[in-house]
Amino acid sequence: IIAVCIASRIIGTVSPTMDVLCVNLVKTAATKISNEQCKNVMSSYKYDDIVNIVRDDLGNIKIIEMNVLVVSEITSNIALKIQEGFDNYEREEYYIRLGSFTGTKILSGRGPQIPIKMFIVGNVETDLISEFSEAGINQTLHRVYLNIDCSATILTPFDTIEENVTNKVLLFIFVLFTLFLK
Image 1: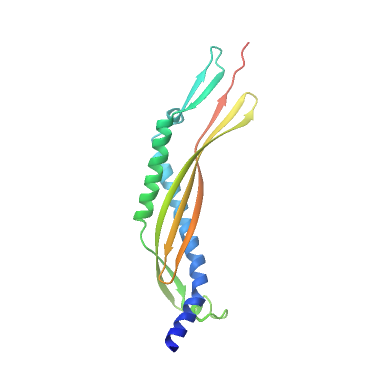
Image 2: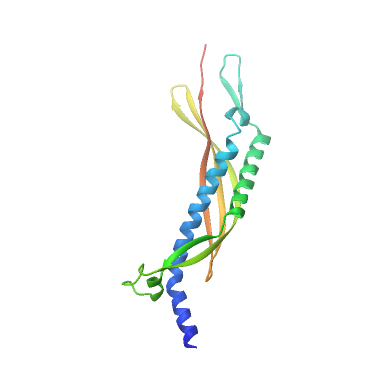
């Protein structure tokens, strides 16, 4: 009974530190994986692949059409690559100093390092955002973002933590010139 009480006290003392550390590690991993995979997938696309600009006889922009098939391909490829990144993410090992197990502030962060393993299981959802803004006289700035929402479950020896990580990645930025000829 004494051993169970001591173990329970130690786990209760270390759990908040472990939880914060795990959440920070998963946020870093999710952001790194999503940015890398977006960069990898987008390296084979150009702005003209996803957008068709229709102009009138005078050269003025009439319509800007999104190529739905290419956009769908991009978002699904990125989501799949990010999911693969989570699946291939190796068990992260981090360390907590032995003094942190005591629960006293004086000993916290002191002593030898105790290794603790963490495993991340994730789910990815993507959403494409197209945004237009004024960029000057006769200029419009077109930005295409991908909102990436990663729901991650972190499995540690003592706890299961669920964390939602959202990342907004800029895929394209393009300046459209509008000429008004009369």
